[in-house]
Length: 186
Image (tube, rainbow, N blue to C red; front, side):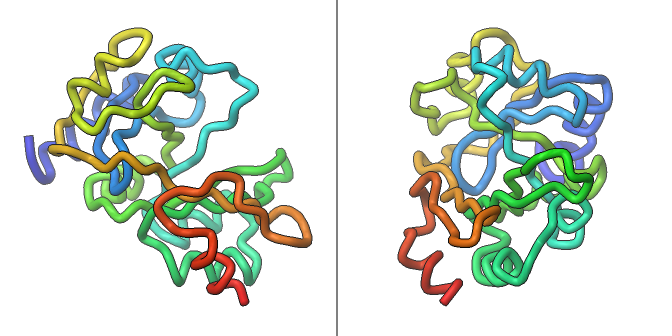
């Protein structure tokens, strides 16, 4: 599959309530539509207490979900699309959300069609994510409804920065060095 065929196939499966293994700019991801996150937890064998990030098509889509203050917008300008997840308060007041706009055309095109996309790495909880689609799918606790092979992905996840407090806090060091994040915020 390639191009719009991939997008159409992914959208069909997601709209049917399925879970999809897809390539991103960092590692292979496991995605489902909002309301179907239980599939992600089930396939990852992950406790529901561990939150799932949301991939977005662009900054505008992110702003409909999360409260993007000046710090979040600065980081988005510096690193989006790319491997940085920002944790912000939800617009609806229902807690926090990790948002990321990936540097991957397929994922952004899918998010543009279906809306923000709950996505987590395609691996069992606590185990490294394989860089090849078939191995990522095989590492799950069950079968994904679709596996999109985008060739080898990287082995480093996104950097996660919590912006919900007075001081930004790097929760996970990933593809963007924490020094670069802090420099962008200075």
